[in-house]
Image (cartoon, rainbow, N blue to C red; front, top):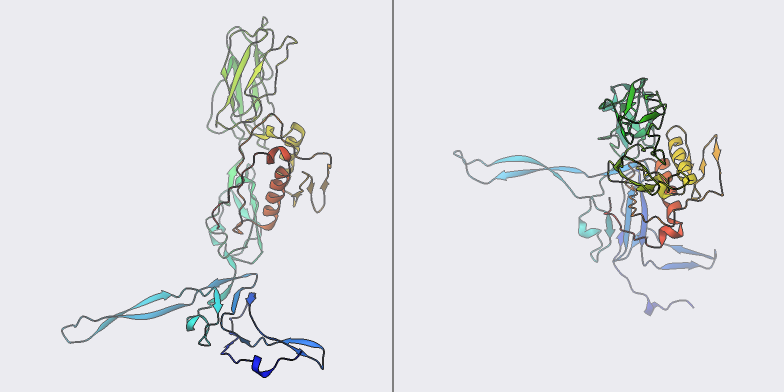
Length: 404
């Protein structure tokens, strides 16, 4: 039924504002009247005018960032001088950016106070990385454009810090203040064996360097007394034991990053040895007991905390995360890893947490776009795989972090 003229009222309206280049409309809330054209059988909306109370939100298109318009104004000194002149200083003022436009009753946007700013192309300054100690940028240039990737290559004997071999330009000056560098390849300090010691403790163990062990008087060494640090940053051995002939059980190996906190001179059936991690963070068993069958109860302490997963999954994830350094891999929610040229699939290997392990886990997801999409997707998939586990969820509390 067509409207009567008595039902039609005229109202002041705002003309659609003109926005800077490379800026797009992201949301609109309007009460516009939609007309129906009988001849063409279509509805028509007038996008030229907006009614009081309508709002529009615009933002820069992908690859651009909003910059405020800087204005200069004179700040006059009203105190009279000897010659009765007024003096002033020129001050730079940055006008706040208008995020939301609303049409007021006076037919103006934001009561006439609007500063859309400009949309500047996102670029990343790479000049601080022109000279990298013990390495170089393979595809170096002074400025990288949006989504361009800078690749790091380290000299022999060095590796990327935190295994980070690339940075993608995602935010304006996103390369600023990043720990993108090369560090020496070193091996972890070996632990002291039970009833023995590491002869000389060094600050760093470099490739081809050695570590030597000795046993206390009355104990015989099982394993190599000299270890060699390999070019990969791993030792060529993993365990050395100091044993007595009259011990019921041979002393267990001490894992990396751990120490034996309670050591007995003789090991009988029922003897328990306590372990602790040097950094106070651990998973797995904290003690082991000598059993009648000359084996030790429980598993060794794990100071990397990988033992919160079942052993197979833990080792699989460690390998999967290691692969992400050199390949474009993604960890799926079921724990599998995919790559452009390689696919690791094990659908029978979901991420599981042991029933008898209580873990306080804090997961922080970076949403500031400082990391690239691949790293974020890997992190998100890994987190989702953990959260899908019923045991992990039974006492999980989500604490939102402050918005970046």
